[in-house]
Length: 385
Image 1 (tube, rainbow, N blue to C red):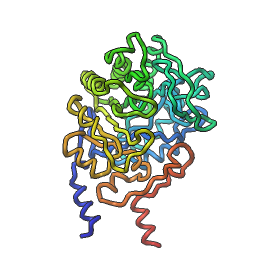
Image 2 (cartoon, one colour):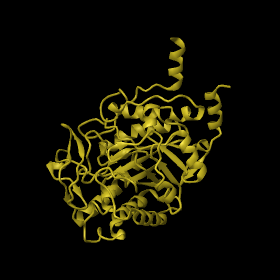
Image 3 (cartoon, rainbow, N blue to C red):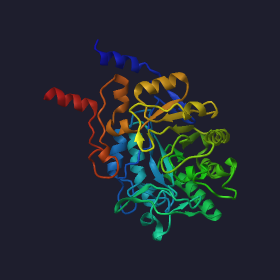
Image 4 (spheres, helix red, strand yellow):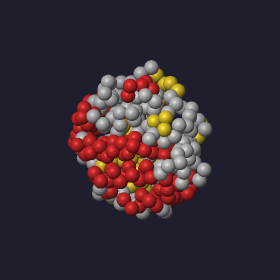
């Protein structure tokens, strides 16, 4: 028996390939596809298209879960040219092609609801307005516009009526996700975007009910979750957080206390899961492949009463070890899913993985998107040659 066959036999019996229940979702395995921004919608309109349906369909497994790429809920929530929305009827109709493709192969798909907040540029805003955020705090980052990557514009602070309007946009996005045929929704409260900007005190300098104390800074998140749960029920709603994230100029004076409070408060909604991502990039330096920060998922799994999904540079072996320790209920994979449409099968049988092409991650056509080979076709080609 060769080493690849031996390794494959071991992983076919691994916990990674045992059933798991996430709220009202029952899955056949614990390999979850991450929300991956790919920027390939039809423009103008940020409308999901047939090419995207092919991409998602390729990566679907029976009884598996896909979390969609971040999907904008408000007209002023865009920060990346080509990212999909779910705030118009055309966008909602476009998503139906994708949910149909996933369901045709027996998979499940959640819509990740998103507002970028200050992470934007005037060229992407309605009528060229300033981007919005909890406070007028400048940060150095970039937004993708029709003219390429450019420094973000200085944002302005949201008024309380505007905050309430965006909460309603999240609720409408949840309604549209249901119309589009999704199996549930995930709130993007991570990675320096609007909800995260409200949470962390480096970006939230407000002195009203949405700023100051941890309780006030978490208010926006909890009100958005309440609005989404009113549509779907808690068992079909997840929340993504990044307690260790520093990308986008993020940080907090007491992250342990902040995210402990967040996890405790989320318990009252009966959520499907809490999705915890640890960053692979720190101070603009990418961590080595397979490095998993020993911070957030394991800690929050002891506070959050429901299942925890862990993400952050996992290898197959790291994933299995994390599951065996009880630090997560399922593992979320990103870059490996980009390059391996049949990632679940490759993991299960110990097949070699395709390498990913980072130059094709954001925007473009089928190259680096739908043209990565499946293992069976790859092996057949090798035999022919």
